[in-house]
Length: 589
Image 1 (cartoon, rainbow, N blue to C red):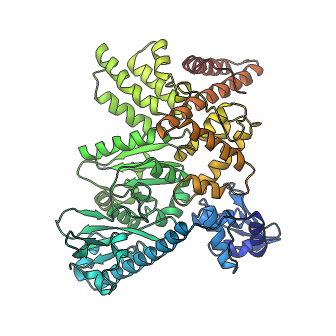
Image 2: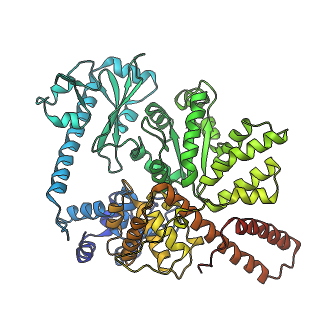
Image 3: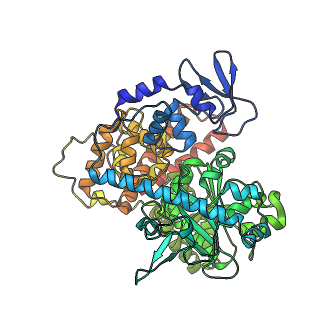
């Protein structure tokens, strides 16, 4: 934990103009400096930096903060890393209130060594590419320029059993195995994991090499080979191309998720710079949460074959619990036999982006899949359609998205109001099946729906995407804690761990309440599935309260016009459906 006094001393020593001008071209304009905002695309400068207040603010998108906040937002750093980076530039040593344990110190030192090994391996592969006409011709044949290859740091692993020995004379060093670069056989014999492959370095959010993906030259198998899981690299968390795509994602407000490294690189060649790829594994909630921190819209792009649609259904199921109301998740299917690489080469950027813009929304894709499995001309088929829809609807956490899908299912399935209520009904959460903890080391605050949301989100941090200020009661301290969690998670560079959250909340007045809520959740013994049910439960009740206020606001107007009365009736019908589907607990506000 970093002392607050050190943070203030650091902010007093660094000049925010110097910090920002490393990345943004600034011009003096009166007492402040002006430039184009790095957080959204603009042609007229609306981004100001105040040397007197040591603060930046964009009048276009609302981004604002101090030097630490800028490092976190623009550099994709966590709170502690941003402070360490600024401190290093100011020649200051970051103190720690709690000294590292011997185990922590050894692990950090070891990871530093492993990062150095990975960086050295990348340099070796890049040098090998320059000396391999065959690999260069392959990349040219795929349409890659030297500029794009350099941007993505593409290399080549030579076709030899111990090629890395050239750059690592101590080939027996265990670090090579720990990094996944070398395989050790049963008899202790060692050989390179990657041979005769085009190499794509995988970078974490800070730009450090944590793994590699190798694409075979020719028709060998497997076509793609990834680094194994290591202390540096977890496939379920890392995203290929995110470092290179970050600026384009912010400028476009969109991220395109494709299936292969070559797809990402080929799209970048055609100036579609907002594409990334998952790493030989199915999409995870951490992937989705990480992308939603940067983009206003996620578009999953799949081949149009059976395997592509199967992968899309997996992404759909992962996306349902974390899909927020205010950021759409979409699905794009290319014509059968095409992938992003081949399609954009054949049809060009404009036609490819036209497909991206017209991608199906999550709800459209789900309803299409459900329709395809049922004959809606018969009562039995419609019954099957509704039954198949129910488990998907039960996974949706976002209250507005949920009710929109339910209305669509009700219309297609031609079901009664009672059946609609049954579809809408929130599963009874674990909180109703377990007694509250009998002993607690800290007092529990008044039970509010915000409190239920708080301790449940701490169990499953990717669900922070559902923290919506419009649903929360302004006067509750839990609301401030939830918003603080959202802000820290939004700017987190790496994993969404509880430890990283506490570091980000250091000095925040909500920290004690967060610790209290975490203890309460631990004593309940929630797992992630139970926490998601509880989050859904709390959001449903908060949405009912929001709708009550909205109806009251409309009634105050007097409902004088026909349009006002129609709007009121529509909202009242939705409110009654929601209210009938949730338990009649005592109001929390």
